[in-house]
Amino acid sequence: MQGKRILIASDHAGYRMKEYLDSWLRGQGYVVIDVGPSDETPVDYPDKAYLVAQGLYDREADLGILICGTGIGMSIAVNKYNHIRGALVFTPEMAALARSHNNANVLILGGRTTSLETAVKCTETFLNTPFEGGGRHERRVLKTGRMNHDFEK
Ligand code: RB5
Image (cartoon, rainbow, N blue to C red; front, side, top):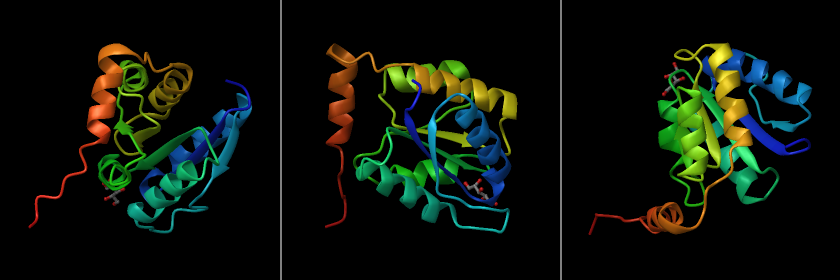
């Protein structure tokens, strides 16, 4: 996975974890596109989710990582975009399944709910696990991608 491009962003609550993962990723040979923030000044998580979604749409990177306090706000925000499959992950097992079964393209972590050590393990697993593809998993991922319903009349 050397040279793989990773887009990463957080809000203020995820800043410390973002900085930690950024330097870990660079140390592993990944190309990191860090779209901020550059300090712990409060910032709204949807603005950062948008930047990662836009970057993936423009094919600036292969996969994305988003971090807020719990990961919940980032999950809700980034999954508004049709080309995004964002997975909020708490364990390496969830990270593996998010890739192999769900073909997730954005890893979402909680800076206030997950340790830095676990975050690194989740990131490493996420980036090194391929989508199983074919058969039932591909059918379910494609079906989910068509579920952009609006119930308002
Ligand atoms: C910020 O205080 C916090 O609400 C945010 O980081 C995130 O946890 C929201 O889901």
